[in-house]
Length: 501
Image 1 (cartoon, rainbow, N blue to C red):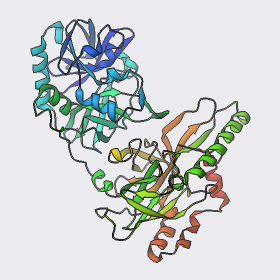
Image 2: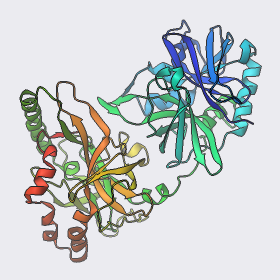
Image 3: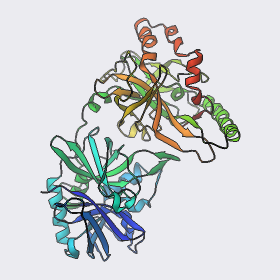
Image 4: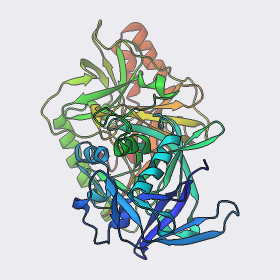
């Protein structure tokens, strides 16, 4: 069976998106095609419903390369996926998207040459299901082939990233592969030895969570969605998911969710008792509110002073809490706050101690690198963005973009909840840095940049933390509150204005 490829599907000039050209010339696409149609979404059920829409399909010729072929189809079918409906209703209930929420869970299947009935549509989907692999494993390499901005000149564009997470029993795939408007409906492939295999369809390229622009995109994992549609398995059974892949498999055991009040961040396990995270993750809520108020004034003052330009500021990546609770929990255990750098000082580091003989003993421990990484080193970041303990750790792949003795900058996609997570060498598995913050522009309409982020080098952290773990002497950690003017200057964009998410 020939490989599926990207197509461009349109209802009219306003309504265009990507699609998947299947081997039998049927085209699978996305509910955004219906945003300006008269189709009653509420009338769609779990099975294919015939539509009378004149849909236009464009794709490159399979054999002659870049030649663009075009056809019109008057026969198409649409259905709402119950697995995705539940995922968007429960897991993503607080999120907002470019398209109406109801469109995101709708599939559209276009018949070749305007021919085909519901039985032929089901047969085409059954043929597709028969060749689909088990699914993308969390941490697997992915490729998105699409038509950015729904433009035929860009048809066939590819971008790559990771399967950052699998959500909602595996039917929803989160990826850090860059996606743009118009890519909705595009095929998502898992990259494997010997080629690539279709595993998903892009659902949304842009989303917002609590006002933060999300750098990840969401795709439907096709196998569980089609299994549910075709009743190939018991519909009451949970969809099967592929296991995590190395190095994600080993990194999972090195990470823990750190909660302080209602807020959370990420912690890195260094031994059975020692957890490394960010100072702002475990800041007392009252101190957070005072700091937020100071930061708001600072931002206003900065806009007055620099009205002619938009200057960047760092924004930390944990979810702020307004709770009065002061307890800190690591996973399911209560932890002791041993040390945290003061708010006015770099490096924004905290050390927690777990009780001896605790319950979480299936952990693995990360090794802190002794040397600074080289620019261009391939890296992974990991943490608990957005979902807290409702999902396993999420991952992103990138490179070290810039290095100084006091800061490591990466191109990974990091978001709220990732503070305190590691930057890991993708080849050796060593921890190169501790994720602290990303960049947000100043000005009346600030923009957050998930792929521009800062971390504290492990070479700064290693000696004081190893000495503390060896001796138990908390004074060993005092050097993490640096008085060095060059360190303050390097991290000054993190101090004025201070904006903590």
